[in-house]
Image (cartoon, rainbow, N blue to C red; front, side, top):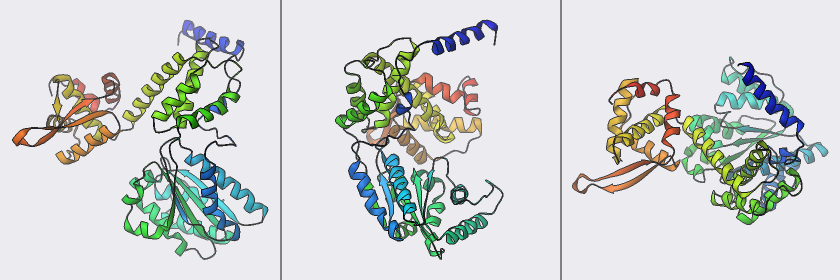
Length: 407
């Protein structure tokens, strides 16, 4: 970095440090990780979950629980608060009770699940190196020695099941191996049809109860944002209509409180960066563009290699023709696979991947009739082609395709 660039960065930091905090009074209350003590419009869910878990206070084993609901509806926050209060009450009555929380986007194998469970009961095991059966026995022995009920929360449990269905089966069967303790499972998922995808062995072992979190309404989101904004901002920072706009956008996107809060936070950060003191609806719209751009990039980057190859086929096909069909996509996809030495999927499987891209909102796939030749789908990209190309060029295998003159 040259001296001029360094001085420019220093100037930015100096201006921020020297300026009064004119926008934020407490920015942490808008953080995705912040959970208020008073979680609005979820009293009935607190009570519903607490009632299922109350047998723990008399040494009983509560039912396993599946919690369903779209993103940003309070599932995780309610679960953590209820378990925290249950732990306090159990400790005050000298009742042995423990719980573990794990996000299955990261804890996604049976080995990782067991190592975290061991860690949560005070057993030190290496992250790798030990045989799974050894770790399982260590956890079982530790739990039986404690003589406790252990509630295991599996957030985004569908992610764990997709990658390691055996993990869930092991947990559902663990009580039959325990002599002096019990384990109970709380699975949290956005997929309301998740239970239907389970292996019959797992389904029969669960004996679960279900709690469904409905999306927040615009009015409920308005209450939530007002509660946070009163703490987050200095007086008179918010322009009239900002809370209503953030709430309306969140309500349109499956009643997602997280999205509404992100909009408010990013809008405030943009105001702060520009040295202004008023959050207006214009800044909310700018924040919406920033968030959507970041979200699309994150989704595209996380796609598996085969899905990216299908996406690249769509991208290249659109560059050549006004209209492309599933047949066109499959033809280009096969050429890509040969050039980068990727296993070629069947036309049916590629069709499934196109449907997945459609569900993610990355493409539209409209069914069209081709007369006696049957039906096909007309495919269009719905996200920025520039972003798609940027993501594909960052993949070391697929980037080579852009160096080919004619595909």
